[in-house]
Image (cartoon, rainbow, N blue to C red; front, side, top):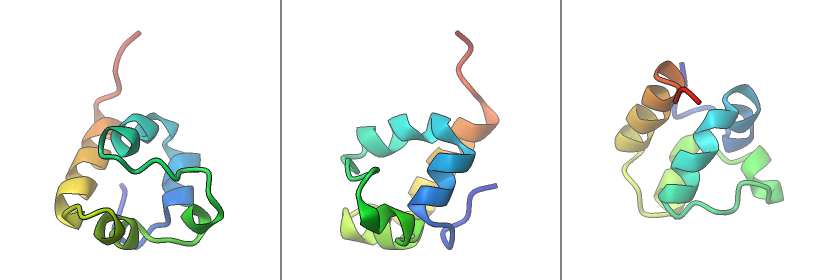
Length: 68
């Protein structure tokens, strides 16, 4: 389960399928050094997103992976 306290880097390492969610929301700095230390909450605030909505989207992506 993804929480707002986790860093962007942690989420990407544990759940690479979340990359698309971040990109769709305009959060393109996934490889920048700050992503390894910035919390999901901090990233959401920086990009003008509601953290609760972001957490819901990320967890939904993790629970319902797209079948290829």
